[in-house]
Length: 245
Image 1 (spheres, one colour):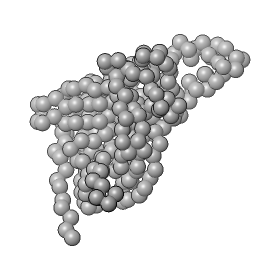
Image 2: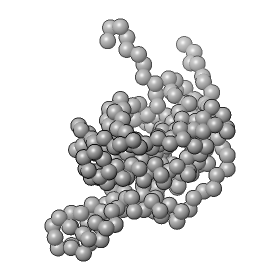
Image 3: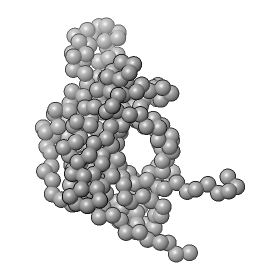
Image 4: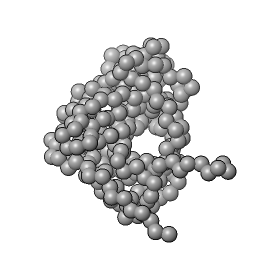
């Protein structure tokens, strides 16, 4: 049986200015609440303060709860994972490029987990920070970017509403084809990685894959300069159930 090959989409390779680590310092406070962190540091002998201090240090190092998944296949140059159905806190913006929208989208989501929600509930930071990219119809058209935080397991059953800027999305089980890349992830690097991964998947004969949209995913605080982990996710399309199922 022949396998129908679909050409990967044309992904923009427009030159973008690569942001230095210093350019992301504006986002650093969102990984640790500085006021509470300093207060807890001054009360190291207090049991609760010590717990908060340890949590703050872990957040600084990127050691936080991660969305669960199972690796179902390891292929040449990429892997297949299954992410179970879970809730994610999301915010959406449109624009010609993602770089300028990262900070405002992140701020909205971090405000949500910091208590700016209907229950005034504070939730821990999680990973990954995943941004779903829906490219515009043409090079001059705005694209749609949806950034999301994984809702911690302890709040999965009933996460609070987030108001007009943040919504909670219950995602179905996802089958993801992905590979990792390092460094920072400005638009230029993301477009290059997405194009290369799409070509790799096509060459490997992967079918039923949505190549028109994809996720760019990050796991590290913006001020971590080395050993950074980023990923591109392409989603395998769900096959319709057979009549017997």
